[in-house]
Image (spheres, rainbow, N blue to C red):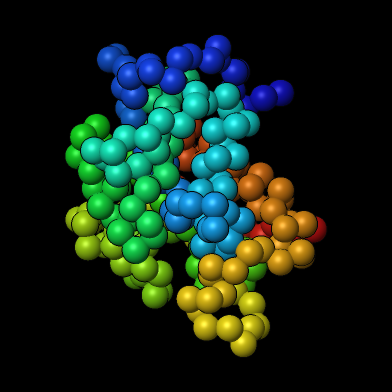
Length: 210
């Protein structure tokens, strides 16, 4: 049985808010815009929100220049869910998150950010509230622009490599990683749907390798 019923698709020009809903949840995937960054490790956040949007029939992504992001939105039960992909490039992601939160008046507790993390081995996904940047420039920007803790889904990409961290995260997924990508996306989707329905995020580690 599906986790929730599919709703009819609406026009991409539909407003990204609806009166009378109990709450709005913002789910942000971090990454870099541009074809040259597609399928790189640093774009796993984008891949996760793209998969969620596709699997649950969200409308077409819409570029919002004033909010520095691409957005799509629809209702899931009594929750308005906004998906976002910042168009600032990774190092300024916090600007987009701050702008969206302020425009839609979304509290920190209803925001979740998905990103890659070098300090976690590939095959693990760790969730937490707040925490340090661990050297991730997108999270550094988030911490500069958003006051208080934000829910985070941290996707491990760590592995033995002779490349610098900057070169490694901008490299395309390797064959083994690409083979496991469907399992990764499925596990993150499960976390996000639970967050939407529960209203909070459990701190945990999940393994998706099979």
